[in-house]
Image: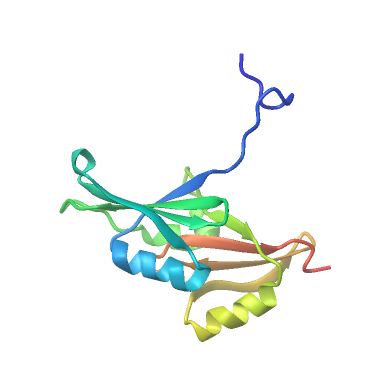
Length: 146
């Protein structure tokens, strides 16, 4: 038995995978909005996909673009936080930020799709946005609502 809980092994977040319909547009969005940098860009023939890794500090985003004609769009209900929780599976990634109010101002200037303006939740300040493909992203200023 492998035990992570008792300290015999360490674990930390490494990356999040996101399927996107337009790789170049997604790369540009993540670079512009979050300052990401491309660290690898490969074609994977057996998957019929292009896979790009972007760095965000020590964390990475893994973007997939399936090149086949039977690609499925993001379902409408997956674009709304309160509806998305009704569907089983991974929901969204959440990033801790220092100043959500300042970031919200930057989002307005950059025409970022803000789903829910900053609101208090359990002592924190929380905001939901969508990337250029409609994927939900949560931003949290820990203790920001106190």
